Image (tube, rainbow, N blue to C red; front, side):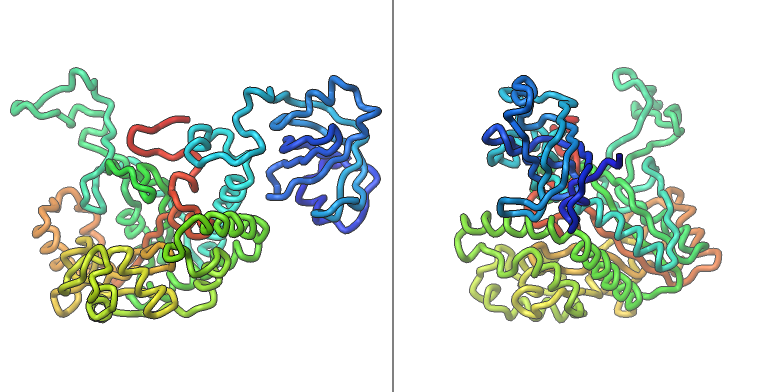
Length: 477
């Protein structure tokens, strides 16, 4: 007999004589009605037990969290809420769950409590929905690149370079922490370390992806990245995943086209395949919003927000034009912004980015041509000598979600920029080689995967969209 899933049975429009299903008990009421879930859908299936002809010991073992195996018949439901239910013929308890000890009881739990029980939190409707959406988004990303002629490459997790130049990296070492070898001037002698040099966990696969783009044409990397930033905000993780495509012979305009098409594609995928989960999370958000003051409530529901991105053309605006708009905006003039925009060159905050998207243009926005001094060394310098061919995509609710640029392909200009920032040429000799041997215009962008999952699920804390968050003072599980 075929083992069915809850998703299959709930979408069935026929009754079935003999079905078999395994799952976990969400609730058991009146000694008769089991709400069963197996992770295949947000919805539970009702299993009706003939309690008068079921062993009392078995009935007592049907508790929240218990794993059970049911054989029975799929029939039209007598009650409201679903079209079918299971009339139970036999029931086996596969794994007991002690009712007084099981943490995930059928009641509302705080997200803080669920983070402390992250190994069990996907037994709740909210987290099962979030993680199914995370899985679908991940698949949609690979699908998009595969269908558009990109090659998937695995960039190194251990690296000797700091792509972002931020310096907040986790060191990788096999030296004795209590008694490391020292140089003559008393510094740690990394020449005696495993790799013969100082190495760290990567903050980005971009530089390595560029090398492959300059031979394979179109590549992307999608892997874990790490940042030792001692930040406990709802938007920071020490370990997170990055999507980074790099394309040879593509300029900034092509990069913006690619990023817009990509974002629309992956969000369309979940709108098509995860509607039950999205509707559940949307209702959760609506309930949460009711507790907030009117001014803090979102103007769009979760699904409206996703459709807002999918259905609108992204407005392309230069940084200079955006600064003028912000400088002359009401919230800036009335000092309602936390960060007042006074002059060209300011680094935009999420409140400014959201104003542009939600209030001024009322569509997703791509800002481009940023001041060179607030962007990374590898971005192509414009002819004005002041700006670089960078671009950021801004979404409603969160502000910046994608950051990218046309890369600097001119060897002399790149060397000058590295020199100005004290980046040693010896450290990136291989990166400079790309500009010596067959250099060409090329571009790419980076998307923090968890930021995308937050946007698609409406979750307010980045710790709640990754299975096991790594944050300062926390490496549990």
